[in-house]
Length: 274
Image 1 (cartoon, one colour):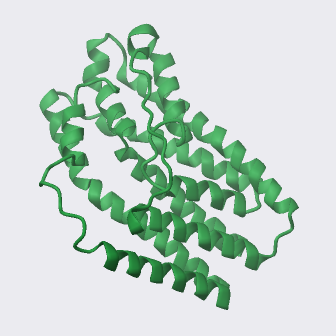
Image 2 (tube, rainbow, N blue to C red; image 1 turned 90 degrees about the vertical axis):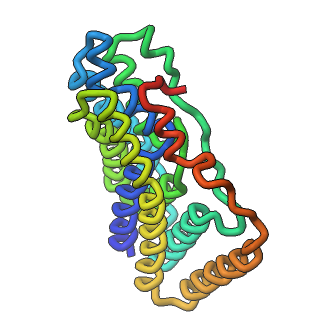
């Protein structure tokens, strides 16, 4: 079961890191640390972006250390495979339900952006590494998916501190590498087009991360093969169906284009994070 939890945790880690690119802070970084903006300030884009990735990796490692301590604590409890599997399954179902917005409910999120004043007061390596660390932790800025929480829980439930540390570090690295997506951009027109493409891909990213969470739950349930696991899945399915039926037709659809990711990302192009 530990191997199964580890495999699911790895998939969730990748999905959480990729999905977090569409957070307000993630989008801001891709409009703030670009070849255009760094050249305008007389800085090297490659150097600043590299510091950003290093900072993000360190941020992920920071969370990874906490996950490793939690994994060591879980190991000391000597929980059986069934108990660990059921806890992991429950966490995956809750995360999927939160990202689906079942019953209009979501796990609490942290609404915070990096301090844009750093751009004017500090050297490139300082704001690059500083912004990167905050984003790499996954918790210091906007949290846009429950997969971040699920990653932390699953990392602890692996009961393997080094695996948990690797998961956290890998999460930070992947989040940081997103800044290099703007490397080929040479004009504001290209930057605008890039952000439109990113915004258009946002809904698909949502579906993918929910699919990973739900798929992880299926894998865990199949590995457990127990009445308790079936009961958890059945309960989650029942709640989802009931909430969908109750909500159907009660919430009017908003105007097209009202508050969409496309509108926000386009507005963010060329603007410092707020």
